[in-house]
Length: 117
Image 1 (tube, one colour):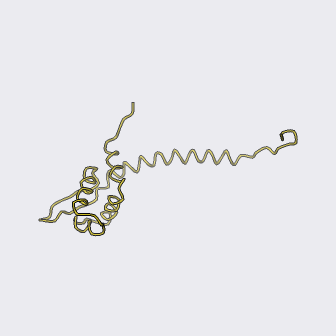
Image 2: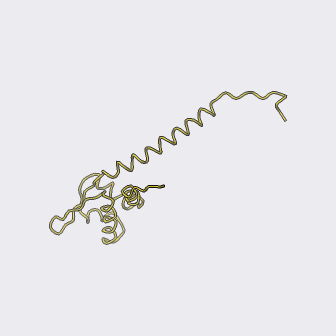
């Protein structure tokens, strides 16, 4: 039976969009207002708000009101679980590639006249 990790699904879903990844990169530098986050993008403020809601549902962003201004901060905790998941498969593929390299590096017998077609 396949089990699903909903938090991991939400994290990877949030990371699937380049605007959301750019927002996280900006927030890694420090807290920012929604307006400051929206500035570099050629999308509407409501679109930025939708992106932020996806990031909030994934637990990657915390938003707090400061008067009329919404301030956002990165919460990188869910990224640790995603990084661990990726690392597990990285180790798997590195082992596979190492085995292939060992196989290819084995000395090969030289063909003899008898073995040629």
